[in-house]
Image 1 (cartoon, rainbow over the protein chains, first blue to last red):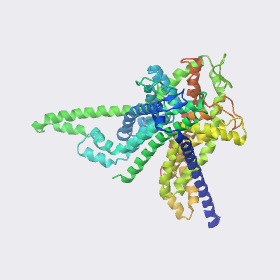
Image 2: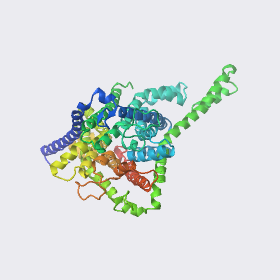
Image 3: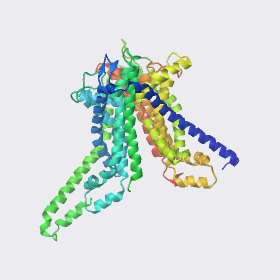
Length: 289
Length: 322
């Protein structure tokens, strides 16, 4: 095994493990550092007015209410698109598909869809939904684009949840004379529901934070009031941050608004992820099978 | 299908006359219905493939228009990107170089950190520590890219400029650091899964022979997990290459071939995001941005296919294949 003495072998082990620990601490410090820095600088901007009022004085004062609502509309729209499609695809993968060429093609398709850069989704949404379907730059076009973007996330989480349902559940139901679909609807899906929920929450979090896909399909710099129909443009938190930080003549003046907006976005996105993670951990601990 | 023989048996001659009619009808319709339902799910399964096809179709439909006026080699190897000048130049070599620069430098940062974090989580951390740290790594993955772009721009860039006395803090190094933060969770979580999937009996055999945990790690676990770790690294690089907001806000935006990590670049995704807003629908510039989309799509798809190939080709199938 090794010609070195036991002591030196243990020394190299301790050294290596210390390096791994240090690396882990560095990664955690990056996360912690960003969160704490943003919190310290952003908390002073947060007020009831900031969360519920519209921007005033050409975006240098006032609140971010329309951006919060815009992000809400877009993410709800995205999950309405992605959840049925994603769960249905997951049911195919876990309950109907048999090994073979077709399954390999489907898996490759999902894997590659997950790897498409978000800005390419933006281009696709612009060409298909904004242009070809004449939806214009709108909530509808943005929601559809974001929905397709998070589709692989929803499929992945739902499939995992469905596969964790023991096959004895299915066999018992089929043995009682239920059809395949009755079994899926009344036995498999209810048992997999918490896992599917977790997946959708992760998907919502991802959709809320994405900027590039909505830049050309939904988001706009400023709207008067809230959107009145799904075909209206919207303000959105991530785009609002980008615009405040990069464009305009008041970049320094609006710094505190920028930090405040970043803090709101982080709270929303990380809050959702945290909820999903907690549900999942609980589920793993308390699962009856 | 379980129902077909049942339905036939009941409709046979010896079936009791009273209950037959409604039952048979229901069974037959449910069999037809089952087949229909099955078809719905098959279509849903193929939906992702259809979307991939549509993405390719629409990228090419909008992007290929450029090549009626600009040759493919002038586009790919042209050294000047002046899309709004007259006459305009659509050479994306500097943009490709920018993307390559940030991808390589960010990997150089993210691979050791991501793999190190995975090794810590998989081999050093105790059960309780791991239960807290794994979600933390996942949280890092869910940080929106615009937030990292903002931090790089507002916090890191001024510090860099001050410390090293360089003309701009918006440069390759800063963008690579922020991209690395995005790539680390991908690399760490996929690598950790790979470490975890090495068969337990191999590990125990090594320990029983007197190897230390570290020796077991370097000579048994890592060789067994290397394909999974490779997949993680490549997917992390692919993520860094396709990421938009960070390079849009932090890379500086100068369309030049970088000669040092302190120079500004304009990677492919940043160019699309920065210019699409001001481009007239259907103009030459519009087509050029879609053509950049094609290049970016092919590059990231290449990374993903390599990752899929590695994970399939070198997949650990159990103790026997080692």
